[in-house]
Length: 94
Length: 130
Image (cartoon, each protein chain N blue to C red):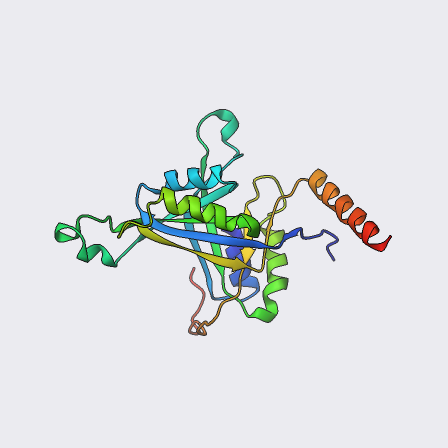
């Protein structure tokens, strides 16, 4: 997922998760072909400091190209508590 | 520097439901009939009252489907209720659901809708001013 590579590689974020889901919509890319309304989705979850959240939201909006038809949906909500997550200082995997 | 604008939706909420595998499609259908636009569904493994229900815990599927639906704040109660009824959430072991208030959301909004909303907002401001 290119967005994850940017978030981890360029912004140095560590609390980035991806899982897969099926999406159900009223209007999906496949619907006009009559082969069903569901499509495979990648769901990206990012935990970030509240102070950076708005800027990061806009960044993901741009790089994930949310603002195009069938570009997906993104949302943001506050967390009550979170633990720090720092990765050990290890060399990059090949 | 980018000159593109981020179109943000406010007054939105996320409804999440964790249900037995195979139940999601029916619940999503009910949500859509109540006004929801779409949903995402992923799988999870659940533990809980299952062990106390049925023989050897076979009455309740451990495999779960987790449904996520973003809806406008004024639709939350209606969609939530329809999902609750479709998922038979009042039956022990069928699953549970909750609502998370969202600060904001973003998706593709067709330019003609943005134009219409902008005009509506401007005329409302004019009325208040005049």
